[in-house]
Picture 1 (cartoon, one colour):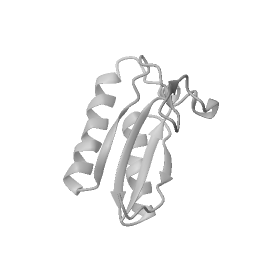
Picture 2 (spheres, helix red, strand yellow):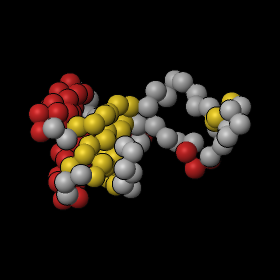
Picture 3 (tube, helix red, strand yellow):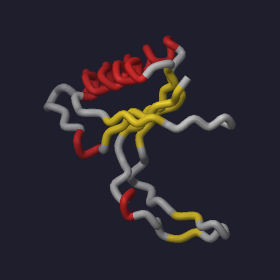
Length: 113
């Protein structure tokens, strides 16, 4: 089976006034459905209040290195499913529940994971 990342940056999530409770419930229901289906691996949002750090190959800690990841925020869910079509369907369900587009990425196979 293949693992997939379903994610969105926090800036794209625009929830209408009075709809937040519905978004929370619907998105949590999708997660509960993923768990019931046995496809859920991990999920959560990046804590934007905690600054990232870089850990170099020699173990030293410094400011982040990769400017391409300066805006790594938002929500992330990892699932493991047998087909890309199934991953797309789960991403579709998350997008509908969260009221915002999702990005789907496939992890390369690693026999140690």
